[in-house]
Length: 121
Image (cartoon, rainbow, N blue to C red; front, side, top):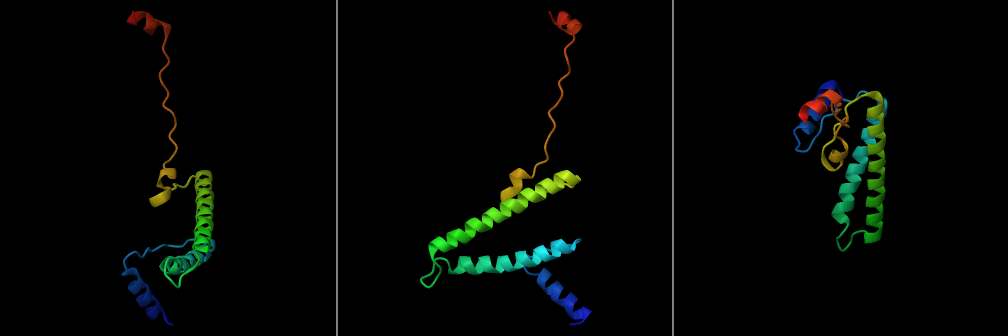
């Protein structure tokens, strides 16, 4: 496949609703995205066949979803800690949005001086 064909294929994919374009900076991220892509296809198949007459057993389906949710939460925790350690802003939408707000430092209240307290009396 030549460069023109690759670019054409990528442009066609970018037009599909729900497509996300990610500029991958690290090899680790590229490998993780391959895993996520495979998982996305498998989850779609699991959901589409889960409750049909020729589908999968409900207990097994629930087990997969539980394992998936644990893995995602673990990855979210690692990512949050890594971002905090490196000073990179952690921005997330969706289910994990509430965990993505930056920590706010408590406001310092001005200390009252004895002279100020006497004036108010």
